[in-house]
Length: 368
Image 1: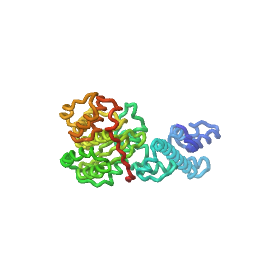
Image 2: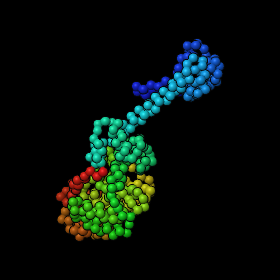
Image 3: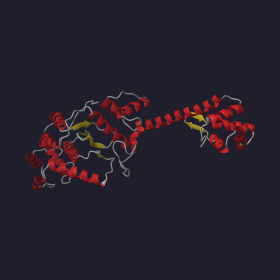
Image 4: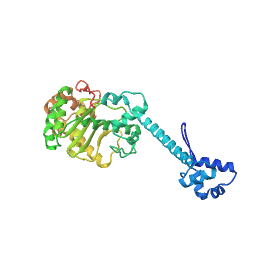
């Protein structure tokens, strides 16, 4: 360990640095100096190498030997300690500044009302306050908020940090949504009405949907996409009576919106209160989560298009748009959902049925 510490333009000199100078000026060995000052060679060596603080006893002995005040040696130690803290703070800030640089700060200005600033220190302070953390480096800790498992090529630090930032934003917004205690039976009773909303425009169904969820103990949050987050949706239980269901408005094709919604609803029904479910390109799932995700996929697909009806429909690559429309009318859903299912299963190509599919345009106002 050195008796000089430095970080960028900050330097700190340990008291041992000055003791080494005195020994050199006297032209004696460290062991002889230790004997003259009345300490052990080991203690002196640790002091000179910056491995130990100068004790009050040694400060007193050095003051007598060199004709200086005790406070001179104590002040050298205090100054060194303060400089170390200054360096630590500078290094910590630089690390936090690097994390802040990976986050699209303008998103939080527009969505959450954070003050606009170009000052890195202010950005770090504002983001810490909004994310409810004392240090932005907490955002990359493995056990913070949701555990992203390593081993995926898409699991970069930037993606993990922004995914957590998006989820925390949803949780912050959910705090302002009043909900009744969670009631699975009531939510299941509302499922047919929710499904019927596939035939409505977002301007019509969105407010009603939010009220339904709130009655059932679900705080429904629809957020803009956060660049580099990779999160499309999330379910997180706050307690046994309240759960947050958050969705991303990125690429809001009607069929994807409704499939994602009912996928997340099934995660609510699974009621894994200690698990944060996320639909994300950054997550590598465990075997149990894979099963839960598969169950959620099956629930969404089967609820939107009942399996027996779909089997009787028996679509092929030759199925016409009119046949898709007629089938959708029969089962009571938007034809774009049927077209999306056929595209997903590669029964028809992606460039088919563009006239049947609908893209939602949902303006999301500042919510925090």
